[in-house]
Every structure is written in C-alpha cells, then in structure tokens.
Length: 358
Image (tube, rainbow, N blue to C red; front, side, top):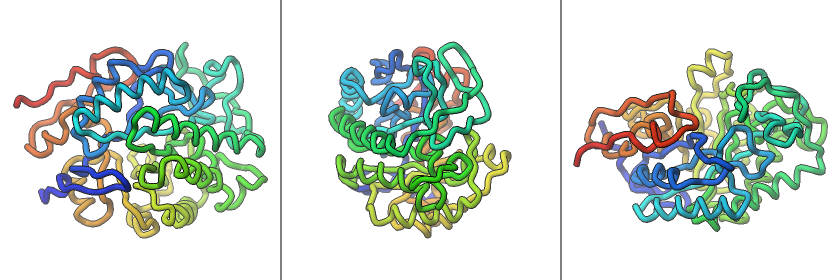
C-alpha cells in the first residue's frame, strides 16, 4: 500500500483530508420526498469520507422515477437537507448534493398520469420501480425545444436550493441513463433540432445546465458525473469515444471542482458496451477526476498512483462500512452489505452497521 488514499487533495473550493469519496447511493428512505432524521444519522455516520456525494436528488417532481427519493425543489426539502448538512459539518465533513432528473426512467404513476419526458419518444427496455410495484416503462413524451430552457432553469434553481440547504457544492448527474445522459447518446436522442443529431448538439443541454449551475455556485463548487461506457437503463451510443472526447474537451475550460466517471462495469460489458478506456478520458480532460465502479482499496491505490485518477468513490462498501476510512487505514476487515436492505425500509441495513471498536 502506498497510502495515496490518505493524502489530502483540493477539489475546487473543497479541501479533502483524504481521497476516499462516498458515491451517490439511492436508498429510497424519504417518504413524501422529504429528507428524514434517519437520513441525518446515515450521513453523519459517514462524515469521515473525504467527500460525501448524496443520493441522487430530483430537481423537480417530473424528475422523480423511484419511490421515497428526497427532492430539492421545495422548502420542506431544503429544511430537511439543512439538518443533514449540519450533522456532516459538525463532524468536520464535506457534502455535495447530486442533482437528478430521471427523464424517461419514470412512470405516469409518479406524475398524476402524465407521461415522463425525454429527448425522444423512445421507451426504455425494462421496468420502472413504482409505488405499486414494478411496471413496464412507457413511451415518454419528447420535450419540445421551447421547454428546454425550463429544464435548465430547474437545475439552476435546484443549485440555489442546495446552497440554501448548506451544501458545500453540487454534482450534476449526467450519467446512468437519466435525462442528461439521454440527451448525450444517439441511442436515446434522435432529435432534429439544435439539441440532437451532431455530437455538438447532443452535448448542448448538458453544457447549458453546467453553465447555469456554475453561475449559481461558482465552478469550484460544481462536479459532474458521467458514465461513458454505461449501458444501464438501456443506454447505447454509436461512437462513445468521439462523443465523450468532445464533451470532455468542452468541459475542461469550465474549471469544475471535479469530473466523476463511472468505469465500465461487468454488467455494461455483458450488455455489449463500447468501452471507453479511462486512460483516454484522463487524457481528454484537463481537471480533477474521481472514478468509481467496484473499486477496493488496493485497486484505488493503484489508480491514483498511476495517475489515472485523483480520488476514488466507493458505493456498496460505504453502505456497510460507515467508518470506511478508518477500516482502510487499519487494513481491517470490512462489513458485508446486505442487498435486501438497499432500497426502502428503516434503520436495518441503513444506520445499524457496526463500526470498529476504538
């Protein structure tokens, strides 16, 4: 071990004591889409992370695609999140809010019978997780060109709300087959206006969102998540290498706090992903990188030491190990996560994982 994970790093305006990041993890424990006291405890327990990135957080009711996900579009939600940020800051932690719009990965049950929205009216293969159980994805409604400034404004307002809630910054969710990713990829974007067709056009909405959020927060408080090799939520692109090389070249001058890249996962490869190598992405982007995707401590050390990334985000390991930093430092055994408690429920599998004895 070279202990790269335990060296400090500055990401934009944020000074991290270590390079161990808590990845965004949807846990579906926010009834009525309002953060709860149980969530306060969950995040407080994990405040030793160099940076916490919250679970994906809808920026508008139309952005909801899963039950019991906390939003950031009304005052009750802001108030609930304020308790979370205070608890993390009281433990000397740092926390960014992930801004989320699911686009077509939703269902009319979430929208009083209205169709979900997307760049193009193409249904995803698979099923939506609805309050009444699993249901087939529907053909979404294609957003009109004149509606897109409203989408940008929803991200801008959500960023304002996040700052009001006390967050150190925000991460724009441009990955995993959700709305901004749907605009990027030609498998889901078959528009003929200024937001479809060419790579430049397909990147336009995401870049407009980034500029709007930067105008609120300052670039040093804004991160962005992308999944260039991702197939989750029925995603594909004819030439992801060209797409993401162009996009990263456009993002570099924005001087974001960081770019958060989801590595190609086994499932992506199994589903025929055109893998975009991390080395190529590193070369294309002139800023700080966080990577995630099934890393353990040894692989994370190697990735940082080899210069492929600046920090590493951990997901499932953070579910089961609130004291992950201490466990990595001590080279101690890790708790095993219980997948049956990942989504929904109470404190079981959420705030009851044991920490190491002092």
